Image (cartoon, rainbow, N blue to C red):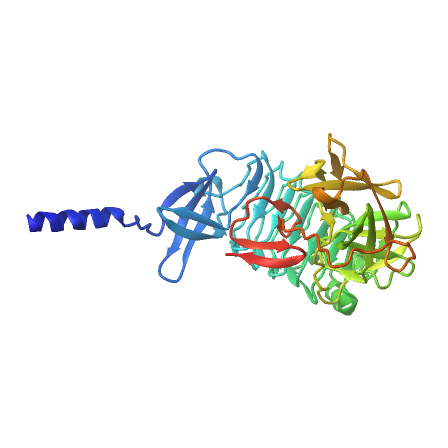
Length: 430
């Protein structure tokens, strides 16, 4: 009897143990499919592979997934051909994709000819945008190349003929045909300190059939970038500059960019953020800033039609905590409310409450978001902190926005593990 009891205990113990996955095991999590690449005591990683059904709409790749009670980091995105398991190749119904910070390898052709893909939110830590990754993505409007990327591979963006601007946050090498056929490309915001063009007989074809894009660089890097282009892409070299022109259509405009911005050379242009502690009886005082981090929403005051000079910041500006201005880096539709907050848009020199239908905020703009408990007024007036207003600031009252936002400024209602922004500061959710 004791022996039987012991055996039953062993069986129960074995049944209670989690089923251990082996390398190459495949499983589905949500609407995505994964393959185990590494499963040992130090690493547990998976690769995104092609799902059983075609995907459409917004695709959000999670940073971690669980299978049989084992948690894996999503580290790879499978590329290649469809019959080789390429994760997303030729899925024309996908309109946006969010890549998490855990991904450090995205193979060639991963999004090849995803012709409906408009927005790529790349938070990854890969060192390369491999060849043909976004080749033929004819609807692509927005993509940022992370600072970790060292190389943009052959034909990586070839044929992306609706891409008007590209932000590159680090120093890269361009392989041949990398931007070929980007016929709408007018601006490249290059935040790196060095630039390399892969030496071939046709190096100039990196920029073939583009719209003569202007490369905007940091002031300290301008001469280095010009030297890298010299004799290889001279017509691009001659357009390179460290001065970004900004022409406001009205006296007051909202503003946001996906790179760090320096306003100090823009004489006569005021740039301010709305700190919650300056809200008083339907009035806001905007705090002046000479530079702001990427993704920060600001209010600008200048002369309509005048040309001001902006620059890429030389070093990372301090984070802006408690900013009530929400930056938008791609066309975004907002409702009247968002959780416990009420949204306002700039109109006619004041911020007006968003109507019940909603508003679309254009890329590069911003909107005001106030806690609903403090925003009963339909209109919010404002001034800058260097202007006399007669407004008494609220002292000792800090209305914090404890919402989670990803690095693209999107509000996240149920954050998973990863890097987020809360009250203007980057935090890691573990």
